[in-house]
Image 1: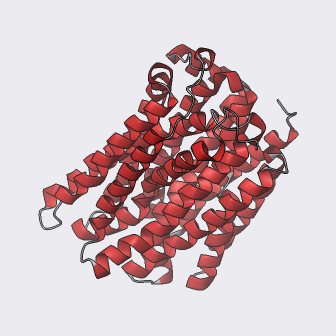
Image 2: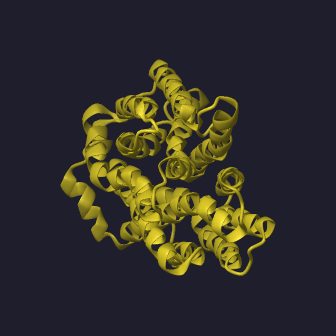
Length: 393
């Protein structure tokens, strides 16, 4: 099979894919923000900074993470990220909604979550390249994004189950902490051949110098706006459904699952399609689908119609991250560690876009959220057209 690059095949790929599930824990931020905002009566502006506490670290830690890949190896770097994530997942249990100052525990927990997630996002695609062939890498990254989306789709349901049946929504955190420990044990027990030295020589200079390559720079901003739109949707769906469609808090939170269910379906379809059709050819068509769904949201306040629009937009956006990441890595496969670091740095878009959305929402109402997402999609459409015209590396 094509995954059998180093004699380990799917036995090595499976724990890496489960690592993508752990990577998906960060997508709880939209659901968690809605609950934390309600628990502590936070303003729109302050609540919008909760996602930033996760995603700001992608700008600060991504290049050091790529250096960790060189120093410790890809598998060991993933293990470090899992340890940090476990700590982050148990920290929120110290917070108490009856003590206002404990809201800052969430800020600290999300910061650790962001650091761990930055490292794992830099390390997992590189580690995946240890066990799959280059021509299948984008497809397998999309498969990983499918697994990540499964986690995101389940998060609102787990949180509401914890709130209603277990009496505390934040019990989702120790549940995820336990799954992170399982992931670490599984990966530790799986033999994966370490990459050779020539694939591991990343430095600060070698990472940043790649931004001088127009193709890599374009994909960098593709990741920036892809994650910005993705996090923006997760952040905006609950308040949009509540303010524009009149849903209750819990119904508005559950509505977010529609986005992630569609993202799960789209990622699965992408993994299958990219195994047969070049991702660069699919890129612009994906964005046309996304833009159609986003624009339609501006013209309806019916909850069912809005959810349909969200579903369509999510299908279009579901593979933009994987396409940009995979196309960048395939452009210069010998620079996989450096490119991983740069692409993960671009995930800082998830820290930049939500505060912009919060500010625009405060001035122009619910539609302001949608206009910001639309701007992200327009850039990615231009990128998709650019990518489709490029020759294979």
